[in-house]
Image 1 (cartoon, rainbow, N blue to C red):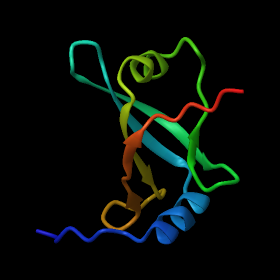
Image 2: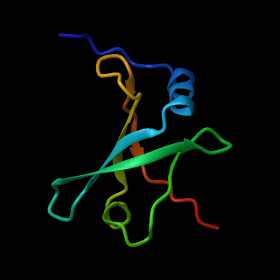
Image 3: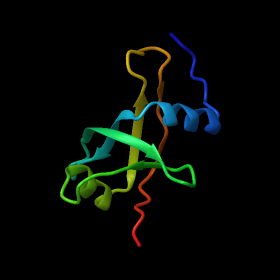
Length: 94
């Protein structure tokens, strides 16, 4: 079994600049996971950004519970091509 090795934030950002495909995990109202395929980018401040429709389940889930986890994945890479930060929703609204 592989050992857990935390990734440096700069390496995670570089990985995200090159690999935009991923899975976003949010919580349904009953506490079960809702997983959604997403495309992820970085904003000017280096925060991960996911664009979605206002009516999407993941958006409703995040409004209710801001906890989320995202897995970014490199195409064709199973063992070494992924990054999985966790955090809270920081919806950018003007």
